Length: 225
Image (cartoon, rainbow, N blue to C red):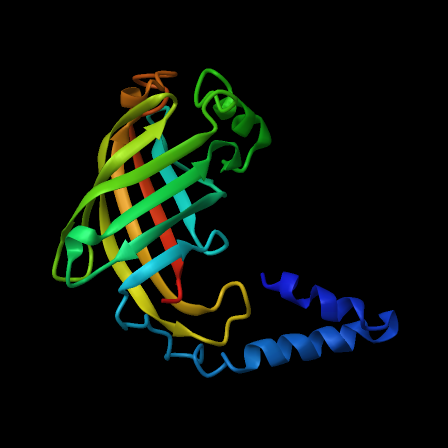
């Protein structure tokens, strides 16, 4: 997961000793974290989440679930997400988020199905390559989350949608290597949309459900003041 930061060191090690060097590097990198992840000790950090954050695309995910042929739910995901968000617990009206998702990063565990979903019958990714969400207001709750109102755009349509946001954790995570470590915060945002509102009409009403449940797991790195 974190091999990119090891490439310069790895290249400098002779091939006959690379196996031992790799083990030593892995042990050194994760040694500081061993106590944190000891059995029974894992729990979310609960520090102040206030600040401006850049979304970490390597630790954030977007999942969608809809009904398939009246038989069972089916879940897919998008693998490329970017954006930023701001948290201000004292002035929640200043909370905001801007998120962008690359449509061509859709992943349903079957290449043929991915290609079909990218075609004009569904997302028409060639003409509409992004899904975006830009917040317009935030209504907080007592648990550090709330309802995030905003404008969602894809497939040539922009309309208001509301995400329910729950805070997961926040705090300093110094032992992760760059670019992942630092002061982090994490949230889960969920909503349900009707795909027909965005012009995705294929296989309605029985082949695929109109309701699409969306879950966005966000991890962000706080910008330095």
